[in-house]
Amino acid sequence: MNIDPLGWLDERATARVSAGLRRELRAREARSAAIDLASNDYLGLSRHPEVVAAAVDAVRTWGTGSTGSRLVTGTTTAHEEFEAELAEFVGAEAGLVFATGYAANLGVVTALAGRGSLVVSDAGSHASLVDACRLSRARVEIAPHCDAEAVDRLLAERTEERALMLTDSVFSADGDLAPLTELHQVVRANGAVLIVDEAHGIGVRGDGGRGLVQEVGLAGLPDLIITATLSKALAAQGGAVLSSERVRAHLIDSARTFIFDTGLAPAAVGAARAALGLLRRDPEMGGRVLTRAAQIARIAGVPQPDSAVVSVVLGKAQVAYDAACACRERGLNVGCFRPPSVPEGTSRLRLTARADLTDAEMDSIATVLGEVLAQARAGDPQREPLATGAS
Ligand code: PMP
Image 1 (tube, rainbow, N blue to C red):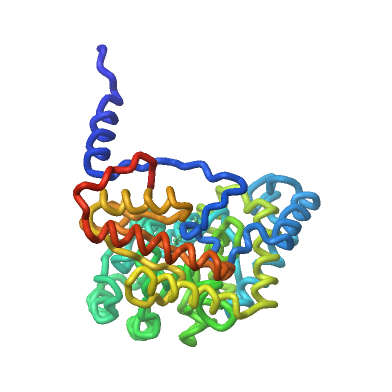
Image 2 (image 1 turned 180 degrees about the horizontal axis):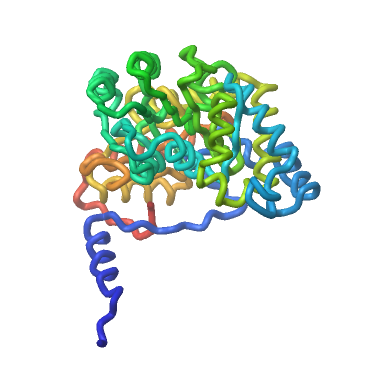
């Protein structure tokens, strides 16, 4: 046989290019002059001297890798201390860190759900929660976005004894907030457990950045579990489950992404601890992110955001792609979300605010965004398509 078994990849690539959906990697420059409105470094701490020094110090103390899975050699006292600090910060009894936020979501959902249980997930839940549903082997129901009544119905009608409800607190594409109070009420009334992904909530919402769960008064409840990433406000890499001691113990015994994955790298633990320390010392950081996000939304002419994420929907994938390229060519680095990350016809620029944006940077943002968005919204057919890439 002389058939190229991967020939179909070329057809797919051609189709993606003609639909404006090609994704490209762009290597970041170490010292770029571009203004960053694309990263998740919400507090601007990833290069903070204290955070960098803590990462280096952790490497000197513990080595470059964690050397093994958590149950063998991958647990250091730094891991355990940080887990307790982070749990205390969000008001949970216990914490357990994972190699990524993705792994934390997969681990907790698959350890708590299985055949014979029900998992209800918000339609806007992050891809890692979607994959967690699929891996769990539970019956899965997708609830309409932010619809606590629908969640109530799905939970009440179930025949399974055990049930989980999954949602982001701050949704990653639009930056909108889940109705956590209502969700918790229906979850509790139906004897289920609520798992809230606070990836975009911690550091930004709540008192001193303690997250949306804390802000709405649900911290520390036995039937609510928080998952987190260390890769956004906490300027490092890794994930965490913040829960009761009982859940933590169960995860150590049975979460596959905890047991079979190498432990979180010491540098990440050191950096995240230092970032958490800085956030404690300057509890206004989260408020500054929200202020900058509100200013960016005004510049972009979109509704006021509830988080660091400012979503500027432009419609067609090609229009969003061209606008993102035009921003980049003018020194403004922005995110560009297209299908399948967002529904067809809602391709958008995704701008993320940071606590450390300066007034001078805000002036440049106003100039560039003003020009680019005016052109994109006018849908100028004479406009030259731009060559450089966006994701
Ligand atoms: N949950 C949400 C809501 C996210 O936005 C992300 C990261 N994009 C994750 C989970 C995964 O976290 P990590 O990048 O640490 O794997």
